[in-house]
Length: 478
Image (cartoon, rainbow, N blue to C red; front, top):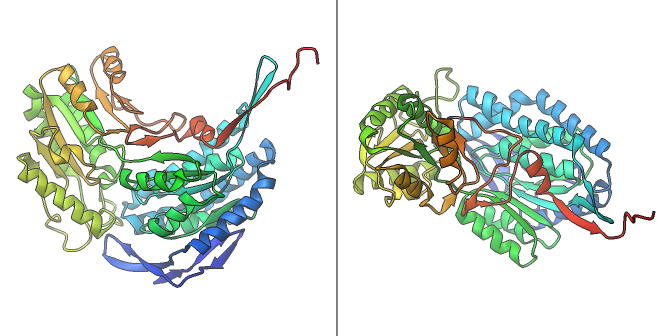
């Protein structure tokens, strides 16, 4: 077992102020393989003080300096790429191929995209005699999740650096090792002391201290809606900016004129990807009622072809879910789906038969799901698909919008104009039309209880900027 008992504060690895530790468990083996220190309020105070001192200098750096810094971070990230992928696979169970091709790639993608944005971004604009300028928001607190660890670190740290902000990161205590490797990247890349700080810890201690700290100007949180509410409450007393990327229960409307085999295959695979542990997963598949049996047959085939197993095996499609707590929650919700009358057509409770340890979940498909059932309302965060039949397009749109969430959504049609028209009626921050993938240059974020603010690309950079109007800065007679 390897110990990671220091935090990164003011450009150096320093010992934790307290004695609490936590074992990091590999979900594929259920065995602890590392140990981290858990931070206290005193550690947060030190890190925030370092970030506050560094802000005075870093906020005034030139575009050229920040471009060069991001270039350096990207160069070192590429050098440590395999280490990052290995860490992600071990800590949260992603198959190695997925950890390399998607998980580690996402962090690098966000850093590269914000570098592209920074090169040409117009920080000033002229309105009459006024100059409107955009300045760094200040000291930022980042609270990131375990399901896409480097994706969320990359899309927060990258634009914050580009904007000229300083920061304190609290990665998930469940999957902290990839964040430690990332911190080593930042150090080797030459990020100035105090600009980037990292303190491990739990939400009630370190997360709460960051969200409520009077010297934190902005907190950016990714996680559950329940935890996001707690962060917003903690931040309210200091009226700091709060950006949140929270839960989702994304509808996937397959219209009658779609290629149902192709659409159901793609949608089911997307739902199961990353073991279902994605906030934007298309977990509610809406199909025409008279074609539900066709959809069931296709989804059942996809479930049967999904190989659940050791993340180190090349043939593995999905690995375990991240923890026993997540496994138990998913099992409870599968059982609840059965109890409430949904038709189980693939998978079900328990591990796959060939596995006797690890937090592995059977790829599960329910049919005849009503939108008032628990499995259609709650975010399961596992490889569980609900198929909901609809009578007509109006009912499909109504079902899609009947949720407290509004993160992502999906529409498939054989007629692009038809898909576009339906996409405009969905109350969500994102719509994937006809299987289109996400675009790192486009905004990522949701409506309703899926959060506020936007990440990725130019929109992510602007979340870390304040707007200042300087009247008379550009007089016409000057």
